[in-house]
Length: 80
Image 1 (cartoon, one colour):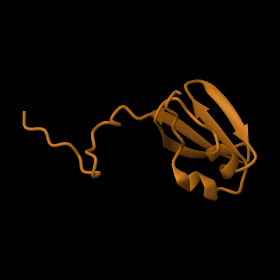
Image 2 (cartoon, helix red, strand yellow):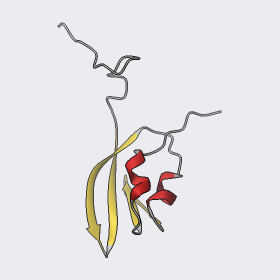
Image 3 (tube, rainbow, N blue to C red):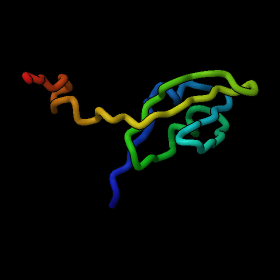
Image 4 (cartoon, rainbow, N blue to C red):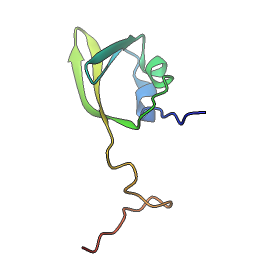
């Protein structure tokens, strides 16, 4: 079983149609709750929110710093 990720939970509160843009792909959903139900193979976050053709457009970006926090949610300390 592969590890999957969900988008940030605030997306569920969007009641307008939602367009998700990631890496050149565009997907349209009836609302934020429908967009939130999608699973992703990478840890993505919302980089930009904009209005496009009377729809909320969320531009996603891969989180390259996903392992920069400890098990208790603190940032890793670097000493060098």
